[in-house]
Image (cartoon, rainbow, N blue to C red; front, top):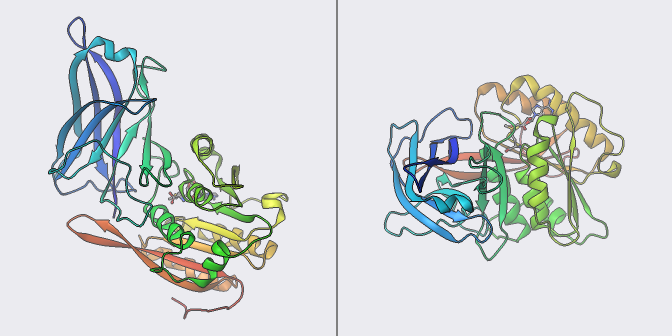
Length: 365
Ligand SMILES: C[S@@+](CC[C@H](N)C(=O)[O-])C[C@H]1O[C@@H](n2cnc3c(N)ncnc32)[C@H](O)[C@@H]1O
């Protein structure tokens, strides 16, 4: 599984002797669930940069050692003038042979995904505060192509951070949209690459921070993406929508949708082509509600395709497949995507397309 650099304490200025100041933070490196720390040594590069220009002011190597649960960062002392500027602190895993300023993680653009996801802090310094907000920014993609930027919260919320299946969904969707020959999934290729006279209507359930739907809206012109989740994600997802750069004629919006509630009558203008669901099957108790909302959406739009990305975490999740079958939602296509894991291992994410008709049905899994 992928590991994520997290801020246990976000960066802040600390006054030293008169006229000097240092920058401190506390990080750890854990799985998406936060249930395990990275148990291998990794070289890190910590960077202080100007918020607006990105100009690097200072950088310093650091090491994460197997067995650690946290790692303090203490940079400086610097001249107190540094606190007059608005700064961002970045922490990235790096190749110890080539220490240089960290670039965005290569999620997009046919490049391999890193084992450790870098973290950038919220701005701090002169404004708005000398302590960075409890947020972390993930930056994906080569600089010259699509650059996806997603904010997460630093706490332990399930909803307000990125999960591994979402990362796999973004890679998968990017491969389909760009026509990567390594992926052959005609149902989705037709939907995402075919001619369209009207915008493609996409709905994401349990969007969390919104990474999957936002990535699709940035990749695909002429699509309308509605991200949905419980009200608790509204602040973080609207912050991400505000900084997103949708492709030509594409748009993004968020609306609250609890799977237990009625569907709003005006959802997606009453018709949806693609439903995205990533890492929403981890809790067996909520699976009947999830399948019920999927079933109601497909009644509303009988031709809709559902793309479910899941990482098998417990045996109990397999009830999802039975519930989908009972609801008449058939598994039309199955792909697996490998994500890197520690000690050169890999983790499997399943990407399953479901639909109402038995178009190219797989045997029941
Ligand atoms: C593990 S998170 C996955 C978030 C995001 N899709 C990702 O992969 O990064 C599961 C999401 O499902 C949402 N969720 C759980 N129960 C829900 C319900 N009854 N109605 C709507 N959303 C729900 C949670 O709020 C959370 O955002």
